[in-house]
Image 1 (cartoon, rainbow, N blue to C red):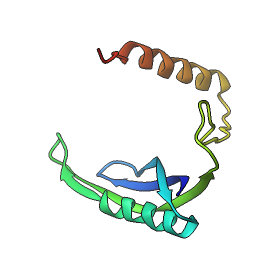
Image 2: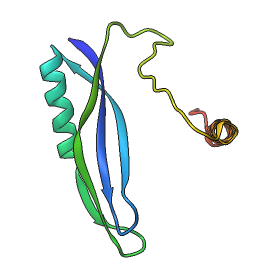
Image 3: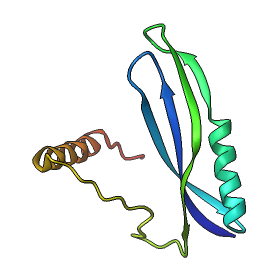
Image 4: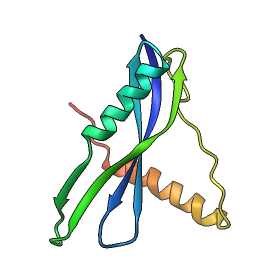
Length: 112
């Protein structure tokens, strides 16, 4: 079996502006075709619709598998995904990343 990272994209349909959720999932398969099919099946089975806390309908619609990357071996520190971010507001982006890191540190609770 081989390991792959799949980017599965969903559209979140609400009364507000369109949103998209990108999931990165590990897929174990014998080859690329099987991994792609398994990723698509994951996306389709995770479609959902419900009423949110504001009594508004919400629909999670599977769009497709946007990327499928093979992992040659699983090792500590292995890069599983990379994306270059371009922005006009570099300072704001750096601040955002620092805020996310601080939030992770504050919410981490070790399992004892």
